[in-house]
Image 1 (cartoon, rainbow, N blue to C red):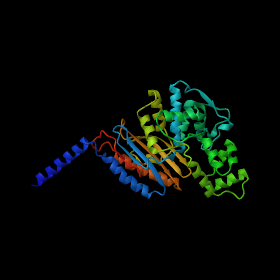
Image 2: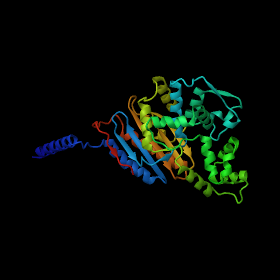
Image 3: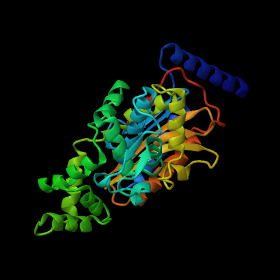
Image 4: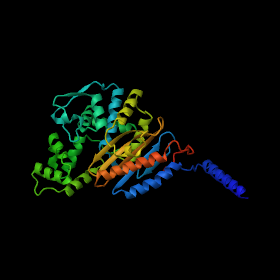
Length: 362
């Protein structure tokens, strides 16, 4: 009797599933359910807010957690800059060995490889693209943005059907943030912006800003924090994680790029040296993580293509906001890396779906 009951239960489950499929009500992929419970727990433990989008490009199975809220991308906007540079290279509007000159007006905060550059020194577009994507060099990014045109970066996103806020150079970002406290800040020189960026403490930066503008009493860190918040609210260099996931999925499929440019894009993102304590810290050592990070005051992102096996890209787009310590955000990213790589492990067998179910956002 027990065997009959078990057989009957199994037959009922099969028939119920078949009926659901026939009626167009497909069950969601099991990994999305597992991810949802674990992500919710991780988000509760985080003293801030999380937006996340995960997509198995091969099957179309996707998961979103607050995935439609626009997030400030910080340096993750450089993915869009890279794609426009690659597009113009494919269109032969620029060449990889074309050189751009580094001048006094090209000094930026967040210079890494170009931090020791001399005025008048020239760098190829290929080299600048490597510096921008590998080391998140802001001077390299703005040199490339000026060459390809910031309006073309935005236009390329529109052509790809990816919705974002306005796109801005990194220098204009900084000028706009400080101008929230005093419009005269828009006249700051690149050297002054760099000097401000060297003050890690928000309070110290606010005091130095007050000195530069002769403002008394000095602004406080809290007032500068409100200036950042006001700028983020304008959604410049911002997008939802679903939209960034769409862009990354296009990159995974090499859409809109020549084979050579697609290969270059993947190599550049695999060569990213920043964010080793983020998603990379939570994935298996055998996995490949081709990505770009972004960090600004109370904002941090990590997004890219995770390869648990060579030909199966998993899109992960994650941004955090309203935290006080970057280390807390990095621990959350590492936790997300462990959650996603375990749930979507290709060695585990799940039924493949023909529809694209997606968990609702938070």
